Image (cartoon, rainbow, N blue to C red; front, top):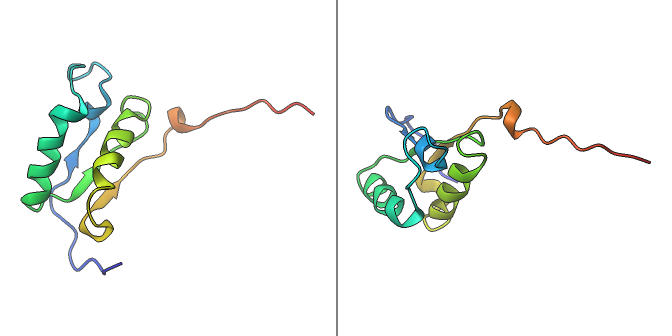
Length: 92
């Protein structure tokens, strides 16, 4: 992977991509793909997401898009929150 010479000054937030109702709930991968493509084409390659954004929906959609471009062409800012923690009761 190539070294990062300078961090991007702008990140594109993917909160609304989680369709949690905060910014509406009608966003689909089909409506978001042109946003992703335009951002990448214009050098917006720092993506901000979190599991809390739609309980993983934002990460899933963004991940599907990122899988189609070279790994060294983007950066991801993600967060680990309480909602990402999965507790399982283990019984012997």
